[in-house]
Image (cartoon, rainbow, N blue to C red; front, side, top):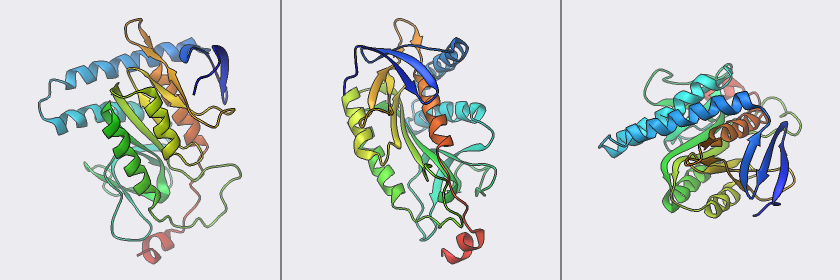
Length: 262
């Protein structure tokens, strides 16, 4: 979907200028400059990881770069894990999740210091799938994983959810390099989303965002490596924060969660 040639867009309380689907500037240069350095660092870590021969370890190294960034910069109420999501009922957890953002203050996490953590679905704010390349295969596999997580049963909340809040989780496909097209990325978002809860991000290109006045996602070209523009990470981080504060996980009964759900 194309947007007007030149437009100032309000994404909640963040204002930025778009010209021909390219991000021109944010209104806060301190954040812009700081996050540009973080983004450059992730690009550098990506290039360094390219020297790792083992494909699985190479992917894990790139995943850890984003995981560390989120662990260091998200508000302390949000924990960051890598592992599986535990359903309310049944013996089969979710597929392996690269990054899980969860309620760090109120919910238990099994194996918090282990390589693989197990997080109750009732604690999950967001799930991020991390890919070296965003291509047709990555888009397809991520949609399959999102669909599988949506099918997991959730323990009922003992109180009503807050008005106009989502129950989560929010889903993100985060890639380092684009090997598809932004049209396919926004199509993936539209096909996978329920109430605008899916985002695609490609660090060397840009990301899809949901605007208040549009029913379809819009792709924003926020990074230009040759010109030195690095604003994709900041745009992703803003979108993620806004999604997190828009989610009300409810309040499960722990007795119900640990005993009655079996």
